Length: 417
Ligand code: HEM
Image 1 (tube, rainbow, N blue to C red):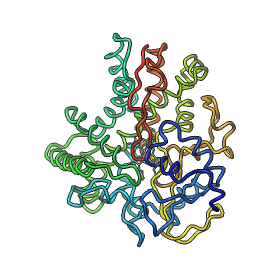
Image 2: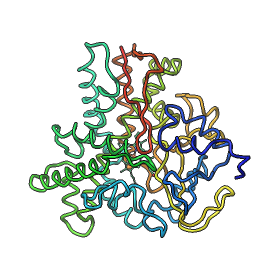
Image 3: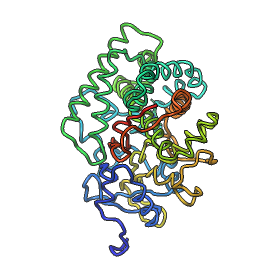
Image 4: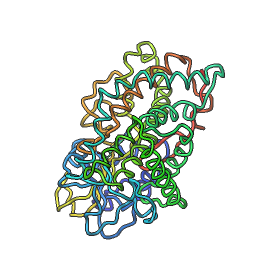
């Protein structure tokens, strides 16, 4: 790309990673798509020895996400790489997914082995069986605020709902949930690509030490929960080692905390921002599952997939990618690709969506997608059924966003009903 062709400054591109672009990175993504399906960007990690690329359109993003032989998540296999997250962690800390081998950092054959061990617990069928419990949690949360006529939708509903569901599944004691939320939030806030916030290493260590202790307790008192099941697999022998076990549990806790809350909170705000869509939905709650898909497409929680690394020199959308280059599929941009969607910048809950990339694609596609869908369905249906007069109770411009890891979320959403 010639300098004269550069429509965006390096700063505005890097702001997408750091979260400085705030609530609305979509105009930047739209400009990026006009620049190309694959564009070179300054390295968010500040590296000089390899190029970083952003993938802005769906077809090319799918290609990168699906082809795990040419594009690997395992940066440690690259001569010029140190893992992007490891820089933030203390190597003597227990092995969380940020430092040890986990689903998100390995490809075949380890990935298949690890994923098979947990995928039975995340089938759509099993998730459907959780519906009554998810419904109960949603109702309990709204019972607590119903009389007040107001709540902070983030703190009172969007966060606790998925956290209680995943904690029940994993067998995380009720008394520990606030503590875990604190660690998980601090880690996510401090870990944007290229960020190294002070204190994150201690949070990662505390989180890891907690899981080691939880595993020790469950070893002594096994129950029917997922952590106890994983311990039983580890004790059987060669299918899961201790570091992988701790790392897997840390990933499941973390992933369940930092994603679905954003779907519920941001999704609600998007509906409030589009009153005609909200009206349509309230008039027919059977549209909720379709609305969830459109909310995921329109402004889903994950801005981008984890970085991939080219395993060989390859041409992609006319760009010469070199072995070892970092390639980042920008999911929120691909989900507004004009070549795939009619009026992509419009929220339309009755749109027929062939596919979106909010949960990624390929072997690393979100394990928790069936769970997130059930949670989203119940969260929106229950909220709109019980609180049809939902309104934002502060000026719209006072709503604050924060940036975590690779996603944006609302800090709070005060509402009346
Ligand atoms: C709306 C909610 C969610 C969204 C938008 C979301 C998004 C994603 C995305 C985009 C990926 C792929 C990342 C990549 O390829 O680099 C992913 C992977 C993953 N997600 Fe989710 N996620 C959500 C909820 C959950 C939940 C509730 C869990 C449950 C524990 C979960 C667990 C995971 C795991 C374990 C992976 C790694 C899978 C692998 O590498 O094989 N996610 N998620």
